Image 1: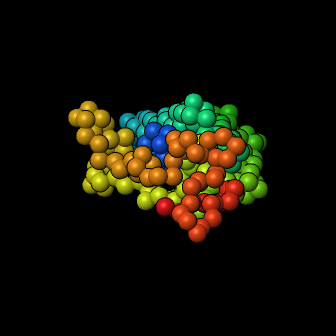
Image 2 (image 1 turned 135 degrees about the vertical axis):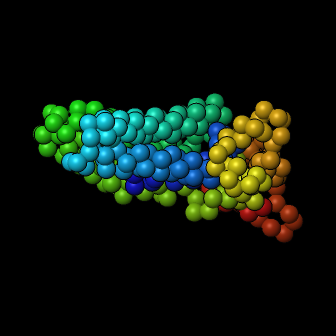
Image 3 (image 1 turned 120 degrees about the vertical axis):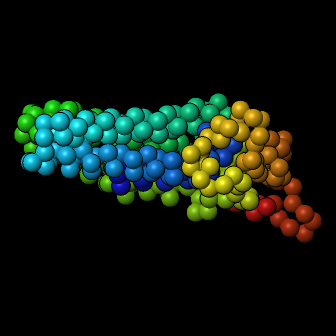
Length: 255
C-alpha cells in the first residue's frame, strides 16, 4: 500500500504539472484510489479474521476465503484503473507534443514502479487463490523474489531517481502547451463539495448535464504555449514590460 500511495501522489503531481491533459482532477487521484484501497483493506481484514478463526464453521471459513479472494482481485482491478489513467495521460501528452525530457523521465519512472507493483499484486492473487496449503505459501523463495526483491528494487529506483528531480516544487507551476515554458498560475479549483468530488472524481454528473464547475485556469492566463511568440527558436522570449528583461531559458514565469 505504501508504494501504491507513492505512485498516487506522483501521478497527482504530474497531472498538476500538465493540467490541460489530465483525465481527472489531480487532487482526486489520492482520495479516489486511497478510498478504494481502504475498502480493499476492510475486506482483507474481515476475510483474514474469518479464515484464522479455528473455531469458525465451514461456512464461515468459505466466507473468509471468498472475502480474501474478492479483496485481492479488487486491488488488482483498482490498480489497473490507475495504470489506465497513466496511459490516457501519456497518450494525450504524445498527441499534444508536450513531452519534454523531464516529463518523459517521470512518466517512465511511474510506469516502471507501477509494473513492479502490478507483478507483486499478481503474485499475491495466485498465492491467495492457492490458499494456505498452496505451493507458493509453502515455498518462501517466491515471497523473497516476487515481493521482497521487487519492492526493494522499487525503493532503490525511487531514491536514485526521486520524482521531485523532475517536477516543480509548487503544484501551481505548470507546463505551457509548447512543452518548454513553465508558468505559475492560480492552480486547479474544483468548486463542488468535497464529498461529491470523492464519489464523482471525474465529474460525470457535470458531463451529463453540461455543467462544468472546474476552473480551467490555463485557458484564461496569458502565459500559454498557444501564443505564437512561444513557438520556435525564440520560444521563451516572451514580451516583457518596458524596463524589464524577458525570462531566461528554463526560468519560471510568475503570472
